[in-house]
Amino acid sequence: MPRESQADKKKRTMKIIKLMDDEYPNAKIALIYSNPLELLVAVQLSAQCTDVMVNRVTKNLFKKYKTPEDYAGAEDEELQDDIRMTGFFRNKAKNLKGTAKMLINDFGGKVPGTMGELIKLPGVARKTANIVLFNAFGIQDGIAVDTHVRRLSQRMGFSKNQDPNKIEQDLMKLVPKDTWGHFTYLLIEHGRAVCTGRKAKCEECVLADICPKIGVDKKVKKKGKKKK
Image (cartoon, rainbow, N blue to C red; front, side, top):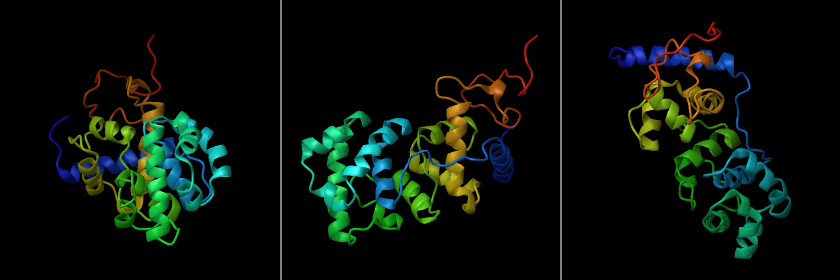
């Protein structure tokens, strides 16, 4: 693809958003939760773990732990066992207890609703904070960059950076602010269904004609055409 101006890249980004909106009309968070605390816990558990597994674990976890006090007062080994299937359970349990204590001591037992406050919590970086802000409070302060968003951002030519925070800044310059929260889930859906980490299924992709396919095989057919 010839060198793109920033203006042309923005136009292409808008086309990509429109096509993905049509392809994934129900794109949204896959984690199951009923309040900001449950969402915060679920997102923390989702690190290096599938949403499917997190939902399996939290189905029982949320019946047992309903308040920050429940997490803060839990025995270490018991909490670790309760979240063991999400992986890295010792570190996650430590962060959950630390988060709960900070919520109690600094935020009146409530999940805070600003980026600056959320990233003070143990184990919470901008990705987690963005997910909580958008889904729990309807606040679009940035774009959550997970593994799918990072991979697709590079393949689609949105960013050349590897660092999630720098990728986020590149995306925020291209994507309209009122789309920031939703944009994350469009890329996640596409990353799971088509533009996977193992193999980009460009022959099935609605974006094949406008994606530079950086780092993938560019010899692809348009969607819907099959080999004879």
